[in-house]
Amino acid sequence: MTAQVTGEEAHVTSYVPVTVGGTALVEDDRASMEVRSPATGELVARCAVAEERDVDAAIAAAQGEVATLTGMGPRQRGKLLFAVADRLEAEAEPIASDLSAEQGKPLTEARGEVAVAVEMWRDAAELVRHLTDELLPSDVPDREIRVSRRPHGVLAVITPWNFPATIPTEYLAAGLAAGNAIVWKPSELTPVTAEHLRRCIAEAGFPPASVNVVPGPGGSVGATLTSHPGIDAVGFTGSPQTGHAVARAAAGRPQLLELGGNNATIVLEDVDVEAAAEQLHPACFANAGQICSSTERIIVRRELHDDLVDALAAVTDRIRLGAPDDPETTMGPLNNRPTLEKVERHLADATDHGARIVTGGRRAEGFPTELYFEPTVVTGLTPQMLAFREETFGPVAFVTACDDDEQAVELANDHDLGLISGVMTDDPQRGRRLAERIEAGIVNVGDPATVWQPHTPFGGASGRRSGVGRLGGRYTIEALTQLRTIVTPRPSG
Image (cartoon, rainbow, N blue to C red; front, top):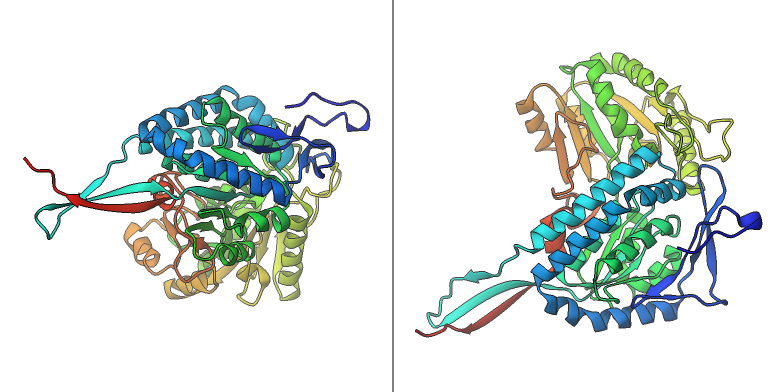
């Protein structure tokens, strides 16, 4: 990190460079972007904008490092992954502080995110240390068939701004565990957290070109990276629209794509209303709703509808909207203006089509930036509305009523995304029957959508627009490796 500057940019704490082969490329003529706090509008950092030559250099450096990483073997790589976790844990407080400042989430949530990232690095370390080859039976008696997992080679990784520590960790930890060398484009909105991660990886002892960082906008840097002939595989988390562009650019190469969802939680009539509202509170409003697994559509049995809406409104009254570093804050601002405008567009469309805003529904007044948005509950959601068909990605709980289990499942499935869902019921068998019919990669019975444990497979249902492959624990490592089958004469004696 560079020293603070003076004058009108007194709040600058860092400059995030292009980093290739462990070397920061700092040039006077290189373009840069400002990173401003969504909470205060103050300048947090400057971020270099990588050029095409930087992507070329990063990929060339990564290509030269693959053999070194592969040659280490899984146990040595596991040892280094443990060291990354130790470095992150030792610096958790300053990392969480910077994460909160540039992303906008409350400091308590940022601390929790860093803690989860630490455990994800350790989980990858444990998993890779126990990877074994598989011997298959051979139809030919004098032949031995050995199947092993090998790295893809050069892995391109593109990650978003909503969880700048944990989402990159999903790809970086598993990718390095597998022996890939990585070229990473983090979000230009949260590059300081990315620099913390890169530095911890380097300080843990990974070879210099193991992770190369090419920051900048997705439309330019990301497009150059994913279409580059030198990459062997791609990992991407982001919107369905961008993800499909990535898939086209990287066509023919292995891809791991997590592309978001407009997640439904079904609430059946046998639940306790107050308890259900308490569970839905974090499912809808954690990280200001900026979570790909957030509950955005609540499908509730009609006889419970009014009581649940009242209970949700009461829950939102307890939310303390404020500055991320204020200990009393329970929800911070939205991260950026496009997200704010999308939330407002979805609300305007919903009300134009007959929905009713019960509480919230507008920008909060009296804050340093326009990005503070009131926690919102809306009733009367219908399939014709944008919010029913698209991911809103903000602090809004849209509620619609259903008459029976059949209609609940139809409403849950009546869109083209399929990431995660929930069925809240006191009858596990009934919940399981509904879960089997919901077209989502994960269905929680007894919990709302949003609940996920990092070692479990996470991704979209086939035929939907929520992505390809699975993140989580060993499933990420499997996605970021290729199977190699070698048939040899069986040893004699």
